[in-house]
Length: 388
Image (cartoon, rainbow, N blue to C red; front, side, top):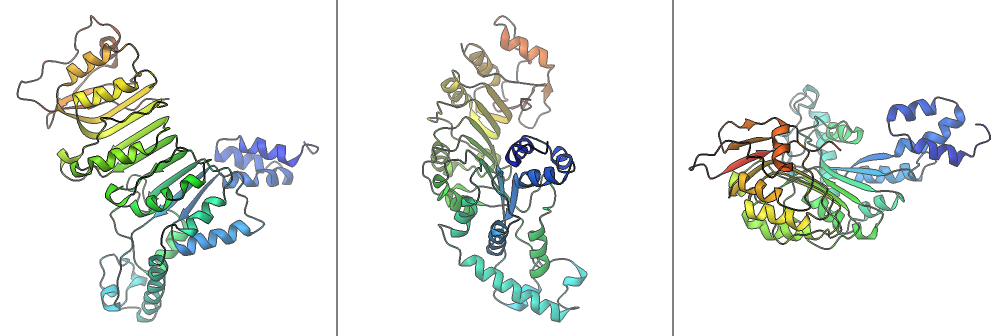
């Protein structure tokens, strides 16, 4: 082992998938610790603020920064309150509820926190696209493959435990808005992402309002996941343009935002087609039978896996849809652990997976669900996502 080149040991460390394995690798000896050091930067998280990005540049330029092994980058974003008077800041509902952050009890520290807050807001307001800080950030990762854009309020994952974020709110005494809109950061990223063709995956975790996002063409992106698309009927054209701007997708996962009127959770799939699409997941949307079936039929020759979860048909029926689906000569695989079908607002009927599989595989097998009531024109389907 003492004669192996350090680059070869680093390549071995890079192939380790878990943090525990990387930790144990670096404990072997001092030489292994040096070789495994770049692996610590395989996944980097940054807060999208001017100060944090400048501190990142300092770390990158130091002898301790090793970004050649970084594959995944997560950018956390927040929308901060804009306050122009100290009296309003003192009473703002997003002021931290901490005894040490009480302007009445600690007027001196409160004055300093307000000064830090005004400096922070002034810096952020001056940032205009194209964002030179984001450009410099992406240029630092020659082997980057994946970017995630997330809001600091990660409702499904708990509070964000990021040192710079914790230091920031402790310094300015105020929290970002609870709404998880991240369209501005996504727009800044899309304006520069074509300059980095080695980036193949884009994950968007916050609420994406498409009226705030321009559209271009991003041929390098092959894997797209949008976890909370703000779908509205008036935004159908923008939603279609946004999805079509990624022409070379191999994997697509889209979930519409759960808030707002149910009938507004619309995702237009008519006219959309990706010739390389292999995996498709659709969550929490309202759509007609013909539009959904047409989308699947257009992709049936190349699509391998299909996930449908929390889908509501506003026209047609699931019985008709799956009879048509069963007739497709080439159809994607639906991996299910039980299917729930119900009229909207009514309890669902959960089937044993075997019944549904038999229906899909044998043309003579009857529809496993009971006949719906004639008055039930809207139906809901839930298929658990496939286990790959």
